[in-house]
Image (cartoon, rainbow, N blue to C red; front, side, top):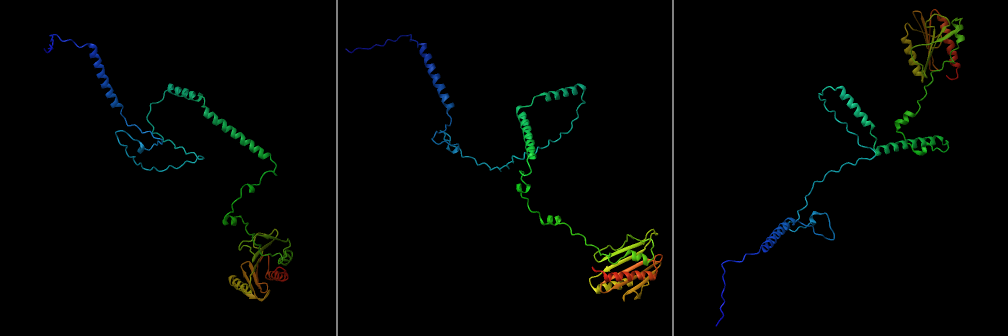
Length: 327
C-alpha cells in the first residue's frame, strides 16, 4: 500500500514574527536611501592624467560632453603708468548746496570736539615711517651740500666735464655776437681853430660850443656851432661840412645847395664854386673844394658877423682843409 500524506489544515494560521517585519522594513529603507544618495552624488568628474591643464577642452565628464570654449573679445591694453609720475588727483565735484537748518551752539561744540578727537588719534606706523624717511633724506642732502662746499676748488669737476652743452642755434650765435661799434663822425678838429675864429669875428670873450639841431653827424657829415661866451641866445656862428666819395657827387650837392638858399648869387671870393646869400639877419657862404670833394656852408647872424668877416672865416677853413693830413 502506498503511504498516504494527509495535510492537516488548521483553522488558525501562525502569525509572522515582528522581528522579521522590522528587519525587512530597515532593509527597504536602506535601499531607498542608497538609491537617492547615489543620484544626488553623481556629478561630472575630471579625468586625472599625468599632464593636467586648465584648458576646458580637457575636462571629461561621464554624462555631459565638454562645452567648447567661448571666444572673448580682446580688450585694449591699458597704458602703463610711469612710476616716477603719479596720476594727478581728480578734484571732487562740488555737491550742490542743500538747504540745511541753521546750526545751534550745541552742534558747533560737537563738531569742535569731533575735530579734536581726530587730531588726537596717533598716526599709523606706515605714515610715521614715511615721515622719518623724508627727514633722513633731507638731512643726507644737507650733509652732501656741506661736504661739496667744503671741498677745495681743485677737486671739484668743472661743469663742462659733467655735461657737454649742445651747440646753440644760429639765431643765438647772432644774438651773442657783439654789435659793431658806431662809426665816428667826420672829424673837424683839423679845420677849426677857435682862437683864430674869435679874432676874425671880434669875439673878445671867446667862443663856446652850443648844440645844433638838424642832420645827425656821420662819417661823411658834421657840424659845429659857436657863440661868444655870455652872449644872448641865438644862432651864433655855424659851420657845416659834407664829404662825398666822388667829385661828381660833390658838384651835384653844391648845385642843390645853391638852389635851396634864398637869393643866392655866384661869386669867387673863396673858390671858383662859391655862392653868397643873405636872408633877414642871417648871412650864408657856401663853397666847394673840388680836390677834397668837400662842401662847406658857413652861416652867421648880422649882429656877430659882417659879409667880409664871414668870407674870412670861410677862407681860413679852406686853408686848414688843404693842409689837413687825414683829409
